[in-house]
Image 1 (tube, one colour):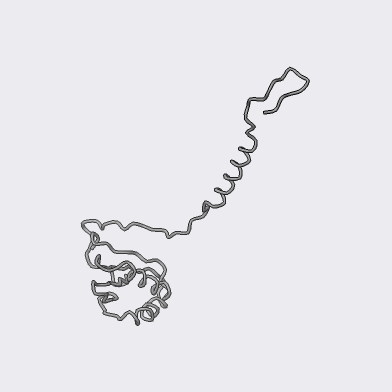
Image 2: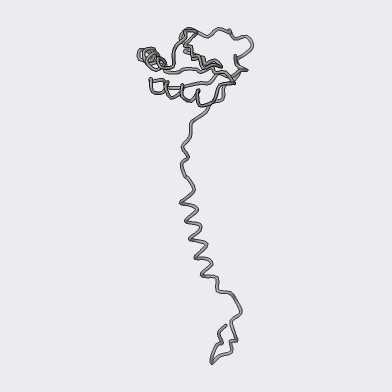
Length: 137
């Protein structure tokens, strides 16, 4: 503590808060820079169950890729090998204006297998990909 000389003022007993405000502003700037402003994510639309009076068979222009428990793949009930999936989807979607596809996978299938099929489909030119849940079937 310092003593004031030549005046009525005595020793200063208040805390100098200027260094604390400087530290606070630096921390605020650091947190603003680290916080992501634009998050990279996928737009997800949750599928809704069909109305009770809707027909159970899909229309023939809808492409459904089914994946069973043992990773057998079928495009609209036609069995396809995983190595032939990309060229087959590319052949289907080259001539189509509607670039949407649905994936129906077994619940016991690992998530990575479904992601692999989504990657193959995106590489083949598929636009929107929907997932068919057990409740919707």
